[in-house]
Image (cartoon, rainbow, N blue to C red; front, side, top):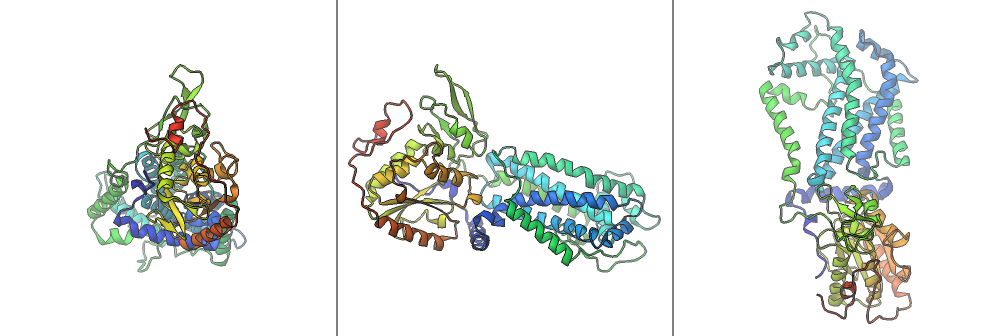
Length: 535
């Protein structure tokens, strides 16, 4: 058995090109900002930050907004050079920035297959969050009651009139026969304030299945983005189009294309056609979890627990990024707790396999014991020498090396996720003949399984549970982070590490590699002893 690229990481021709384009963009931003502050990796948290900025700036604007004189009150805000003008601009630009961040976040999740199975709830709640956000933004544009706000209200009324809801057409309210009722502006005002509370509910659902969910970007990046918005608001205040006037036909209406992109489309077709288009788009987005899931034969199975081997240490439960593992009372007659996996929450990331010292938990074929069987076969086939490095690379990132046998004179050993790598594999490689082991993970902020890179680094170098044993020379173990399109930088690091390994004193060869396992299974030695055949 040799390590191969898992079927779950293979991309279809439809997504391969945009995924590679996104990987190149990630690499470019990494060079500019580093992986810690790459905004593309933080798109979800940036969207939340923009919502916070919108709430803070919106509270100030509401203090000066008057339902009885909507446009005049916005004009007074615009005349406040030292406060209102730039605060309104920040409010406007933050809404556009939020749409960009949401779009990037959704695209990343879609291209990486994070929209089906246990992750379907996050996708669907994200769509609900997006729909509410767009509607709240539209009410904000209408509240200004400029030519754009009136156009949005009129087009919305025309579409609603096509539905059998109202007893008489609501479009008549915008005909100019009489002034707009104050109830109309009050309704928009109320929705603009109340609907964000519903967004909080959807946001809670969106992250409800994530352990240690991060809602805000790193502090430096967050303050940097806010600073750019403030500077932009001061230098380039948001425009204020002319006031809505039913007696004047506006031939050119400036539109915010992030939120009013639909207006030219609906104006060009009949209301019934517009509703069909909207319904088709909604159906396509909602059913993405169905048509993006792998075929049943390619779908990875959830993790399993061998209760007899489980020591009840709770580490797999702590490390699981999706709260799919809980500790329950044992059923084998022994005192204590045992890990239990909820298959409805497990995404088969395998991080639990890397966290389990006794190797009692993991997806089918990827437990610690399975990994040891694979690394034994790898060593028997490749027979690396004391001057050769084994490159353990994430099959999804790390320069896309999964299909390569060698890279920069290093033997390539691909794994599903670096977070699922059991440290005993690294020890087995070092003690089994390789001069060194170089681990290439996805950037921590862009790990396919959220915390895989972080936990792997801590197990190798910070004594996290299932840690790499002290008997392994750390000078022979390297670690780096590289995206799928960062093969050039990875090559340089591999060459430097290989050169450093070759300067070390060659280790004494071990005829038989024996590893310590924290469990009571007597057949463990048959798995670990290369001198015995597989049973």
